[in-house]
Length: 107
Image 1 (cartoon, rainbow, N blue to C red):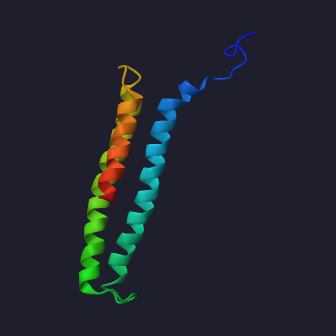
Image 2 (tube, rainbow, N blue to C red):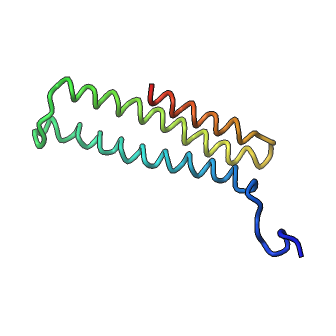
Image 3 (cartoon, rainbow, N blue to C red):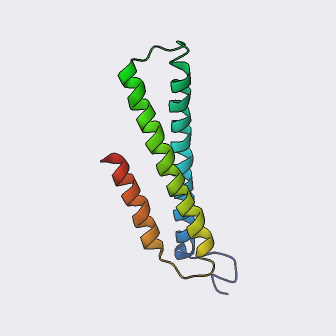
């Protein structure tokens, strides 16, 4: 009896799916954070919360950059998931893209 016969997958088979799921999970978390920023931008002019004008512009900038960046990151994850069905692509390159995205968001 082999490992494949009993339905246990090797660790390397989970690599590409785990990378895509990690990327999409990160995208979901950032999307929720951007929704909170958007909500604060709606509540500030209505004077439900007290936000200084310069802080509002900082929130607006983070919201815009975050939404644009997360759209690109999640779009790349979905595209990579479907493209790898037909073309052999490297999981390492995809993970490097995620790491560079995180580094760019930090610095």
